[in-house]
Length: 154
Image (tube, rainbow, N blue to C red; front, side):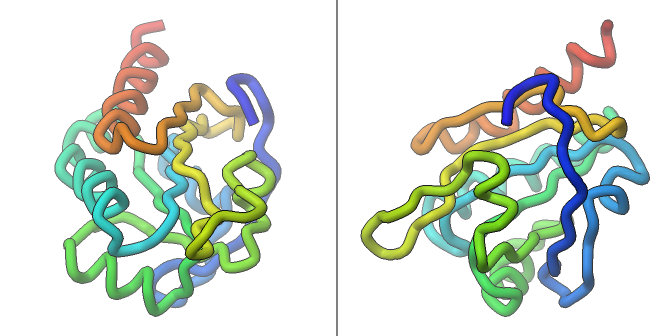
């Protein structure tokens, strides 16, 4: 998946057990869909908390962060609650959505199949921007904000 691509509808369960669809997530504005390997791990916690800490800036641009990993609903709930994340965390245990976004690794020790990738998706379901880095945790939220600001300025 790259800039300009159309994102197909998907449906996953969030950390509360509610069913979420892409169209439902986009109803209030663009989303920043960020894939992360494992809830509550060190790097993923840093990345998720950085998105949380920038919540006001995302809201100013009408956008909502949405995290996604292969973790089950219970692990997502624990992660969201422990860090007061305040945005949806989606459970993708079969990696079906991760595979569509090329955010899936076939094999890696420890079962960390989800790649760290971030996509800004406009309300028209088109990818506005994408970013990938396994080790630069803060850059995902920073790059997403920069992309949203460029879109707004255009």
